[in-house]
Image (tube, rainbow, N blue to C red):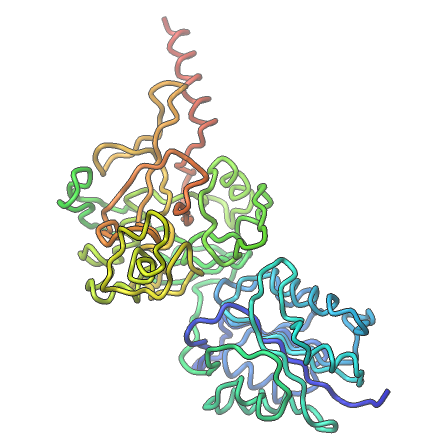
Length: 487
């Protein structure tokens, strides 16, 4: 075996039309940029990462991807011999070894983009053959191919060439990173979108282990599990719209600010809670989780609350609409001709696909670029507070039960046999434009087969408002027993 350096680069993840990494103007690292360095000897690389606002850790490969914030830029760099945390890698005929490793790193987070770099020492013809084969070791073993790029350096003797190229790219990011490595390496698979470096990194108001009130609308906080939250400050607004019989306008006051999740709950989030959700083949972990049994969701959330006095919950209708409006009085997130940039709904793509049933609702002059079903969270422009997908994609479940008018919330059942009707807000991937109205509301009977229902979370001070069916029945029974005792 001839000893030389192989540079194997895995670019994985869910790529938006542009991957933003960005300039860092301050000295504090951005929680949305993570870099894990294993065996790195380049001081220059570490310095360049810090200047770009990366939060650097130095653990094992197994630790690198854990709790990466949703939609973060996640960089993992490994330098060493053909070993992983002390265990030999057997490449000969064992593509699944690399596949499993990459799959584990992918499944540990749903970063917007994972850049995983293995700077391997030792030559092995089987390694080279595998990396250049059409089998593509980047495929997720869970049945979902995340896409990616496999590269082997053409040079047999260049020392620290990967670290040097990456350092140069971060200091002067004018070249598509894919192109940069393609010029000096054997390329197996290429991502379609350019990978560039620009912009200012987002910051958070406090560390993950300290939940506090936000200071202004749009402040961000990342929970210990990587979920992103946006601060909605106290305020007043007119809730509702005259266009629907059950949404006649009312004045609403939000007495206390609250945190709302930046993205809809994903399959990844639900699977991580271990509440019986199975991420089977075809169920993309970065898609909205779909219809959710609230009874299964709230208890694990209660156990993971970040601070005393705060509660995870579903948003009330008033909270949901307040966050969706984000200070605006408009009914839609944008002019109609620009809706395709803001929401996944029944559009030209759905019409052209002739999807069964739902295509008849499609607007044939607007194209959001996606035909059928849920799309990856965060693909569309956020509102002015930085919240994504409040309109379209998944219709979102709210706390409480449906009432004939907004402004009041029904948390109680009429009888112990009456389950009530929940409320969905925001429209979905199969909704006509009229259902994207910020005030539009529809009933939900809890049918988990509905292909358009989903949810997002809030964190607010005080006790949880949402009641599960079992809790409502127990409360009703207690009320009836108390009434009989008082007779």
